[in-house]
Image 1 (tube, chains in turn brown, cyan, green, blue):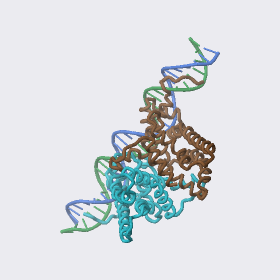
Image 2 (cartoon, rainbow over the protein chains, first blue to last red):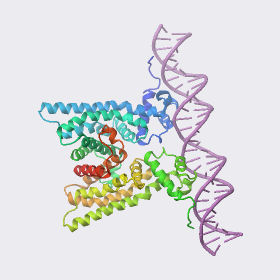
Image 3 (cartoon, rainbow over the protein chains, first blue to last red):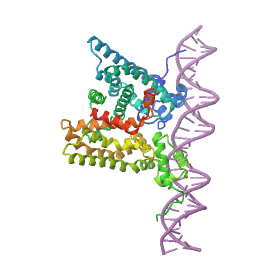
Length: 212
Length: 212
DNA sequence: GCCTATTCTAAACGTATGTTTTAAACAGGT
DNA sequence: ACCTGTTTAAAACATACGTTTAGAATAGGC
């Protein structure tokens, strides 16, 4: 019997928003259920009520936006593919890489929605040792598999192994860029500042294209 | 009054070894002082006795090998520089990048000593939010500064900003490779296995060279 | 207005945490 | 042997943790 909630913008959603942010800034263990519930202004037991456990909450944060992001990736891939076919040419390496990296990078720089927080959350989630995470990552792996044939088509000299390694490296650059977005200015003694999303994306895509 | 210790290979060192490993596999918060002391077979209070606090222990783990690693980097840089001068040529880009990446990557693949654990520890430490870490990273930043003029010499078309960005990306690929060393086989459906240290290093250096 | 399922609240539980304290054991130096 | 500084030991401290429980509040369906 679905009803309207009492407390404004849905307590459940508010918990997800808050924990997304906290998990983005700290490790799983360093974020307490109490810090979540107090910041979300819900009762302590709400987390266990809605998500069963702290681990369940973490999982829910991941799932909420993962599907959407991977759909965006596949959508961009599809678009680029159609455009290439229409122009009677192969898909470009930069288009492939851009399709993989643009959703997270754009989300990262998206100030308005909570997506930027999600991307930082994701990059951190990859480091959690929970055996859950491997299962959770499956979805992303499946998406990448869809890209592999395209890479092979335009770089036939590469083995599958080569391609997986390079995708692996690309994700590395990306996650690092995300996790240390704020540290580039420290490294460069303020020579570099956080630029626009396009600037960051272009630098990143460029680096990866050449590396590939 | 410096004396010989009673319990074999120095309790203090044993604590560092154990916590290095535990911090390499989990976040700061997820590692308990008790798990350290019990695995190191020392009394619970030993951590606070030797290092003042858990945070102090973490810091000590970092410091123990950081200086050595950065010395190795500078040593390789110096070697390459001398070799290039002797041959009357500019230093190669690959030599520069190799000097930065070889120490951590070789340590990573070094089965014998505890260095491999340290490298994983390091990559994780970068993500700890403690304001301490920024100070701790200064040392590495200083080393990279020594490399910048060389990059500028052989790539005069690049601005300092460009160079910092690319060093930034390189560290990203490296840390990711380290943190997800075990996951490459998951991503590739077992197509890729953890190869030799040379293989990994070469792939990595190559990717970074081209990206640069 | 009553019923039922859902949501929220407050309190408590048991355990694990980092740190401190107090005292015992120990190892040279003289 | 005695002293002194260092290291180990066991216990206790206070707090923070994730989770559970039992009951109050709430909202629609009829």
